[in-house]
Image (cartoon, rainbow, N blue to C red):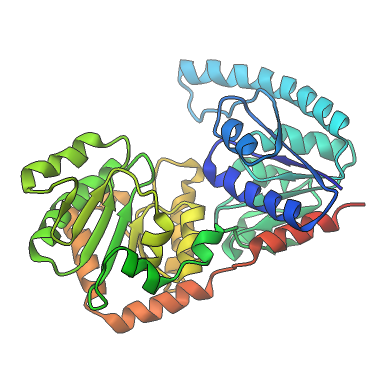
Length: 372
């Protein structure tokens, strides 16, 4: 069995594809797997590091602007699109896959379209509640369409029935134990733990809203709080030195530039605050965590807002849009939630009810079913 994956751009596209590919590699003998991506994005590092063959095509996305710079970029993209279609066809012919799988990102477009024209079975997976442009276009042509959440189905016009598979979650998170995690972090049983982060690089609006909250919490010790400032926000991290923090710690508050044990921190947390990327949402659901989500308004199709609302509409999470984000609004929501244990438990149950913990198998089963 020979399977070709096409994906790239962000970890949100790449890591789920790698999880499924790894599951297939572990459970189906005599399977050859190859990835197609770009040479200048994360996939060029992540895919080879995971032990998979990797080929590249040259492709960029279109800019949604009529500025002279954007117009020039889009003209170049058109030429690259034509070239990448030829490159894709050449790679597909050489590898001769039984099925071609797309996991989003603009690299999926020319690869999947070429495979369709060549009569090779195809399928795609959409991570977000509001599908991206590439997957919405491909859905009309491929043999199977898989989505993370049911909410995405109403936004997709597909050739065949759309299947809800969930999104793969890292094994260490699925197997994390709350009591062991809290013991590892020295969190007492009678105290809540709040975990907040804005991604690995950090999110300035979230950091700004958190500043007074973190200082107040460090001084009153009502609950424990771990906050990731982000590797790009060193100045914010260092600003707490003047407030009596030592190495990012004061009282019950710990501020880090990066959280390298997210599985432990997430498992131990009673309340999670952060962006609403598809992977984060799936992790929150899998662990049954109460969340306050601040969707990034800077992503395509505003898909993080739709991801967050999938939880909100099921009483499985809460949202504050960035335009409404203030320190007071966030503090009020934190305090209200942590003062109502019954509400916390109800929301935890609703979040956990949304989780699909065997998504790698579900996706792999559909991929394998397409092999002639």
